[in-house]
Length: 180
Image (tube, rainbow, N blue to C red):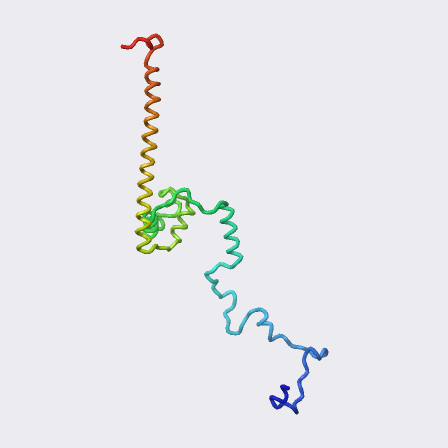
């Protein structure tokens, strides 16, 4: 049908390399394509690596994070947005002086938390920022009130126990029943 369509009735069909077992087949021109090289491509040793990690590198990184943080990333101490911005500004100002370990020590957080803060670029929208600031302010006020209540309770307990022990220790055994 194709011969009639293209007008190839008088032309014989060429023999296939699969039908001709005795023919020598030269595939040298295909070596470059098989090996992945193209005539206009830069050599492998001159190519720059892509910025993206390979799947193997990504998998290895994820495994390392799983081993380092088995229950997931849950920092024991969280910084406010203002403190995070201060940390970034200090790092930008003088990276030699304000190194990751020094910032971690100053802000009392882990070096991993400092690295994550410095690497992150997320900024909340203005509405979200005001809501976060209000929430952080409310939480800090509640936290301070709880600390004050706990401290006053501890002081009262300490004062009561110290009054009793001071009173007993000041008196000699024979003076316990004789008050001055």
